[in-house]
Length: 254
Image 1 (tube, rainbow, N blue to C red):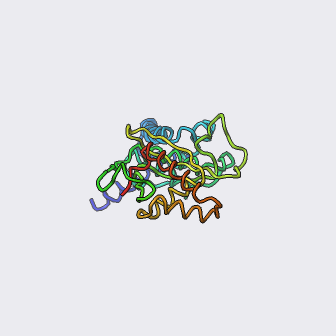
Image 2: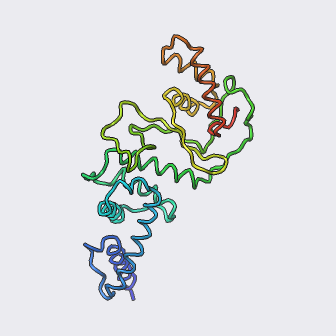
Image 3: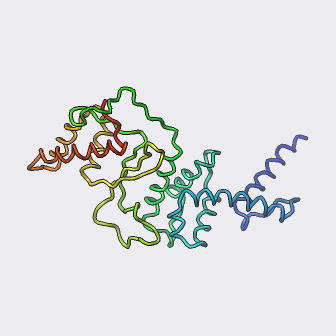
């Protein structure tokens, strides 16, 4: 009796090792290979389908063989820290960032594209709620501190990840970065807005200091740009703030 728990754990490890890597790990003794294959296929196909649905563009950029090779490698080497299927995409992103050995078929923008696709799903399933307590939706965006929606994420990438797909594959890194804000709108749709560098910097300043007014942030930008016409920066920035509020990226002011 004293050996039974240890024997059972050994059998469990053999069972899961074969499920992860059926080509290199033997079928546990006493289990019919046909039955074992049912388990192996079931587990792998479930994981693969969740990853494919979470990263549809990435999936299209790989051949079928290379896609399954990558997913199988994730299945073998990564140890998930969550039991929830909806969080598998985050686990896959962690694998790409920290554990994947770069392969010849991997595009140079692999991590950026994967992160962008993960953001879309993360915002879709986020249980973050928007509260308008202590927020004035009709306040002056210049003279008061604007409030950014918790469901709006400003992002910056070296590659135009929002454009990449089978019909557009960049051959080299663009000269200019791509600035985006991905957000969940009032109808729970995931949208994105492409930003110019000034508006991206404006959102960054508002994120860093929730007590800074729109005018103060724009004045700082004018100083950083060494602008000869700060009034024009403030005027254009005010229009940008209003547009951001119209899309629900800004909720109003404190």
